[in-house]
Length: 157
Image 1 (tube, rainbow, N blue to C red):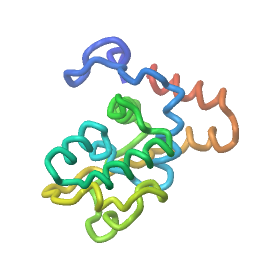
Image 2 (cartoon, rainbow, N blue to C red; image 1 turned 120 degrees about the vertical axis):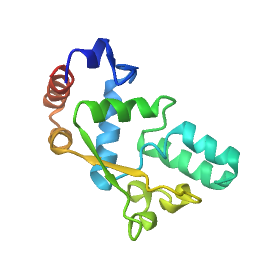
Image 3 (cartoon, helix red, strand yellow; image 1 turned 135 degrees about the horizontal axis):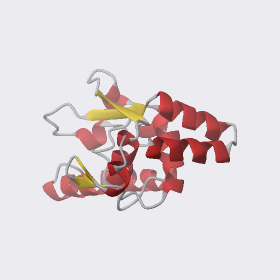
């Protein structure tokens, strides 16, 4: 990554917009369990689906409650996805239509099919990269300083 990740333009966006790097740990812990469609879980996408009638009010509330429980209920939630992707902490893979729709979000949430109803495309799922697993290992071992140093190094490189 270049210096532009922090202060300039990259792919037409200004970085960073993720305002609290302390929240990165919630995203890493979630993505260590099972790949998650981060774009589909964004607050703006969920509201759009609710307004179009592609999602019930009950499902919307259940997904929002689950996001709050796992610590990713933020108004700028997609900004964390962009940050983690650009510093190489997460990778994208295609949804497996035979398995993924039936798996609960993050292992504890509503089934993925609840938010993908009436979906014509195959959304991207996000999982940890090798760097992501290194950060997870630091978290699991209580090595907070190493977690912060490694995250800082990923941002600077």
